[in-house]
Length: 354
Ligand code: CP3
Image 1 (tube, protein in one colour):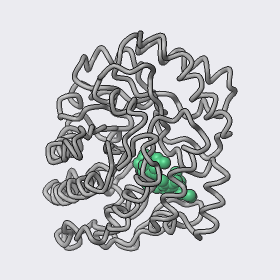
Image 2 (tube, protein in one colour; image 1 turned 90 degrees about the vertical axis):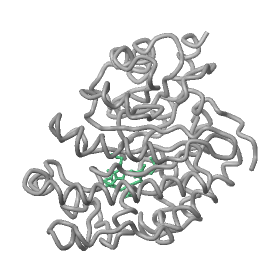
Image 3 (cartoon, protein in one colour; image 1 turned 180 degrees about the horizontal axis):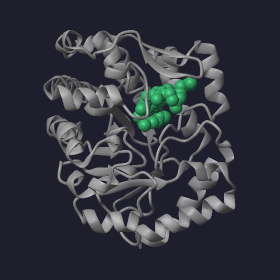
């Protein structure tokens, strides 16, 4: 394997010294890029992009080719490949987001859930190894999975939601059934992430996109505990290198102290929290990744630069910050505004690393 030419991102996750603050963008390969929309048209659909290692490689590399200032790449795939492999039948309807043909919402369908054979996800592992070769050492490759709780919301509801009432009803009425789903998910994700690592992923991220919908007690019990179990089961070293882990609960900044204890190397932050205050709360236990509001990328290069300066200043001097958006880049982002953000991070971050 070609030697890594830029390890700034991996070093920042491990809170080691770097010359500047590394940066990448959640959903950096996606609909805001005309070249992505072109590839999706050729492939026929989003899922065909995910299921073909050739297409997944092509679109993973698009943001890297366009933006030389990116310090990391992320596998092009989706968190919902996992419930799909469990037999729930993932599909997308134009403009409507993800849906499942079957749900795991009553006792029988929940008890029938099992850790799927990883060969069902071989297309993901093939994509990881092919992407890793194609990147050719330019920047590290991030692998990822959804959190057990976030995947459970899709498995119970059968689609995306905002209040997750069916999942919460199950949680309050039949907690043992929800625990069964979460346990199967956690065991699956350990195998899934470790197979991504074995295929070449150099860091891994767990997306707990809907953990913020839970009460304090429920978050610890039904989301954080299962992420802790996953982190404990992850391969920590591969090919002579440490494989750092990032845990991101959207809307989860209330619980940063508890998150910092689960053994992850870094925590993701959305835009609701001041990153300087977050840093004080977690101390030197973890690195922090975030936390620019993606909506700012709809504005102007001047407004973007100002906000970048403010986040960098709030984090302050020292290492352990990976600059990112607080959630995925929106499809209405002008690509040149993303470039302005990346340039501002590079320009203004060096002073904090002297
Ligand atoms: O970040 C990247 O560039 C890597 C690829 C990636 C995708 N999805 C591609 C995608 C990653 C890391 C994800 C994770 C994901 N998927 C999450 C967790 C992160 C988050 O955003 O909270 C979730 C909740 C999903 C489930 C999902 N997939 C939803 C809700 C949707 C529809 C909403 C939307 O933004 O379109 C998807 C589709 C999806 N996943 C697209 C992409 C590029 C858009 C598909 C298209 O081309 O139409």
